[in-house]
Length: 490
Image (cartoon, rainbow, N blue to C red; front, side, top):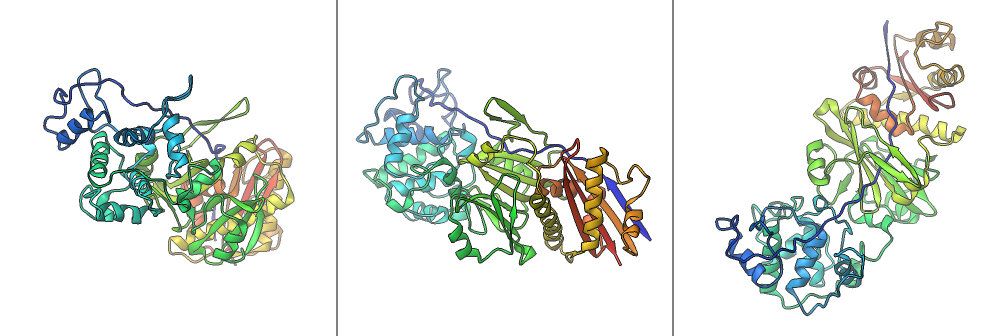
């Protein structure tokens, strides 16, 4: 008889935001006097850009050709190269880049509206340049447009892959893009109406340009979701108050789409069916996420309260991206590869002014079923057979979660000394192998699941050859929410 069970308590998880600022270097220098460009591949173009008032050097006599460029910095360079595009001075007290953003927004050019230089990359440049030539194109087609028109030769090769869309943009690359454009076209034009996406839509909808799950993005209509994906298997309650549309018909392609007020406000997937515009996808490494997005944030202000976050062993990281909070989950037992993604629109996250959801039977039942689904999605992803749901095991698990909250303990053995296996036998469950996982304090089944998968013993239970699983969730007690998974093979 195989008896395995372990205890694990996890830190509270919360999506966060950050604010960045950037500025254009304003110190002029003679084009031939830079100390760091004479042997640089972009020396001639750098001299051209400085002579034409597109960009300046620094007071210390350097140009810093390899320094990373932010979106407003590149936008300012671009508009300076075409002086017929009159950009007014900023209002008193306004950020220096506000007139550039306003000018671009009026022409419906695709923008991130993010001043963090680590958020901008060569792919964003391709889409912006294509839009200035009245091309409303997706990322790959924008890159092909630049290559076909001689506006880029790529970074390592004249191909979509060789263009290196996810690489940051350097100062030398920025002025080379602009010089190529000046040599080929005489004017910048408004983008077609169909390219509106980040300049003139609510912040929450901007995420649709950069993150999607099964082709669905924040801001999409519920009708569009059903038209694209079909009817969900069920509709679950969520800790935020919206409904999760659960797509579990194929565990290899599992997804949860959060819907409120007839539109998509949240996304979640542990499967290989999501993408970001920076090339981040399931199975990539944590290092690649941090290369593209930098360090995750550690708190979020909601009203006058600062909500802190504890990333534990670094098993996830949350970022503010285009009006949404995006959390990348990592598998520390598979070299910190990305193993899931959650997206919550900013207004929805801001409205959740608590660490813990308000408990209800509907939410507890939703968490139970999601916990079961996530276990199976993970198993199938790793080449294992899914568990079979077991009502008896779920009832046993639910009673244990309720008891932990009511009696104020967190343990596999209850105050009377009964073990998980005693409880199963008392409930008429006979088994050849059995196990139990418990967790407490997690705000959702999603975070509880990823926590278990990053704990060796719990992971073994979830990936074992045991056949059946029942899950019980209960609200209350000092840790607010308790999860129990009971596994067994008859």
